[in-house]
Length: 456
Figure 1 (cartoon, rainbow, N blue to C red):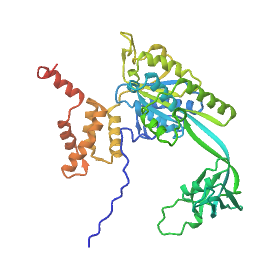
Figure 2: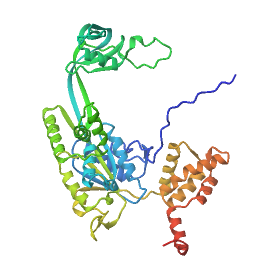
Figure 3: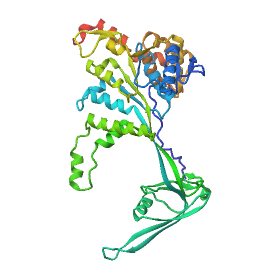
Figure 4: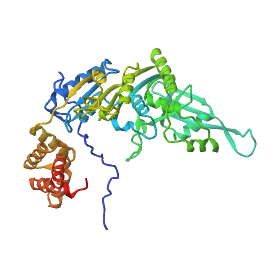
């Protein structure tokens, strides 16, 4: 008899270029720690980013912009992601690339505005009247079908709810019985029913049944405190773009014509300026009444030099709006022509009047020691064992070529080590892989040496 172990089908987390970034790695005084939270070096840039995070938290940064400028591979995107990690998951973070605006389907300014609205959150606080408790009784009361025939229909449903303080028996509408069936509610479940809408939410099974089985797939929740009938504060987080989409999409009926109409519609529909203004009015009204709170998020635009003069002009207006997120630009360009103009040169390819609005954070090239630490960190993130001499060789390659190229050699080197029967990456694996692949500088050198052999 052969016994085989069944492998788990759970997906392993994909490792991306910035999986190791967990925050800015600053101490309580806002000073950068040498190597912390996945970031190495760039102390000045990290400390500046820490001040930006403090300004965002104290709500003094809305409608302003920051630019991360530095050579390729100096951690601009990493710092932007670290800012997002510091702010937490409740603050919306919307990353985009400058070239995204050149879509064939919708206007450039529409893409920018859509991403602006994705980066603005709205926290809606609602006080709802609810009936909450553990289901002790669930009895549908049937009656003769008023339309005739043999079948019976549910006239009403009797439900018993129990909390730590008392019990209550409710007589509910038959439509609520359908909701109870959809949620698969049965005796012993903890549920809450909204008084105004009749919406039913199953929270889990009561923890008094927790030792019912040896193996359990249920989520057990404690018996609710207080009375069965109570007021409950419900907090919902949405972005302004979610509201735009919800109001832009017409809600069709269930008949064939309206369903066909929905199928025929193009996938991407433009949201009008008029609709956005109406939504803004409602949002402002909610904010004034104290029902909702605006949460300005972060819009990160990488490769900002790819935007053209029209987009930059539009950004001016968008930044001055009362409802605007914090915008972080990133660019690796020096002085270059502003896209969309004939010959206007400007630092970073951004017009001077927009640069005037920005706080610019500089990132500097890494030293060899810093490169070694980053490569070691990437090895740990990818679950690779690297010998010290292999790390030294790899950091040398990184200092003569680029950090990105050195990081890209890690996985091929681990495969070469495995072929050679080792679990650790040795110096010879790095050298072997280095001879198989070319970096950009080596490739350019070969092209210039053999230019007569290539097509011009």
